[in-house]
Length: 443
Image (cartoon, rainbow, N blue to C red; front, top):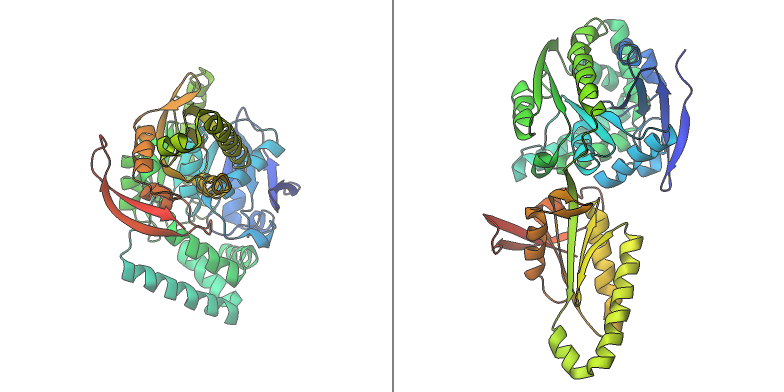
């Protein structure tokens, strides 16, 4: 019998999950596209997946927000919010660290999770995915138009649309397998929810964070997958330090039950070997983080105007406001010098909103603050972060104007689904940082 479905609260959204199987380590699954933790067991291919993985590990499977049995009210969300869902599920089952298995649409989220939380992920499997959708502006509009047409088709003929999608994703499947997959797809996402997911996936780009992935990584690729061609899988593996690339002789994006053994054989061998390395106790030396720098504009002039004593009182009030907003935004204060703050965050959208809150709050003191943000690979040294990403964030802040929240293009690429909007501030050279950088102001 399928395992019992339980719920955990992540923010204001209830996330449905299941835990099953036995073994020395945990695997967190992020299955393709919309999911349904209960109906997936009725699909022979996914049942074969669950049974094989559950034979050597504890498996944690969940429905992404807006999908399946999870709350439908939380479909469109930033990647960091969706990573919070993963951590909430792991906490609910008492999993301190797990292998993260991202498949298809779940690949980019799994890449980002492994880079951001190396203390929660000891291994990573990326199957049938890519870092970004490389599309020209015209192609993006075409994709949006196709998504809208797909929505209309699903509304008119949900059964036929589900069968077409199943046949397209698993061309070697039997009639029984196709019907079960189509049934799951139909109940996993409503036409409107599927449209939201498609829009979100056109925007998310994690290419720039791949060098920060420090956990053992397997990029698994089906040899004949027209949804994600093997060239994209090889490219992804080449962008992740030390990643292993394995191509399996499987046709389609979702293997049939008969092909599942060949599909999962490299997964099991990779995880068993990676687990032995993890047991040796090596701690992560780098992490993906968003850095925030703030400072008061024209502070010297302001200090001369109000005098030393009033300036000290003003600074104390400024510091209290900044620290309050950092706490609310889940930021960590790294350093403070004079009227400037250096903080780090595990999510760029939270960092941007925190910066906006700081800028708005200190205006009541009669001062303006400028701020700059960048997301990148940071070294962990005695519990603190350092490295080129930190210097980049400081240089971005130096280009910000009074009351402005300026971000790098990396930050902008990682906040899809957050509702944040930006204005292009052009290409700049950052002192001491190679290359040219396009900067954006959060508005």
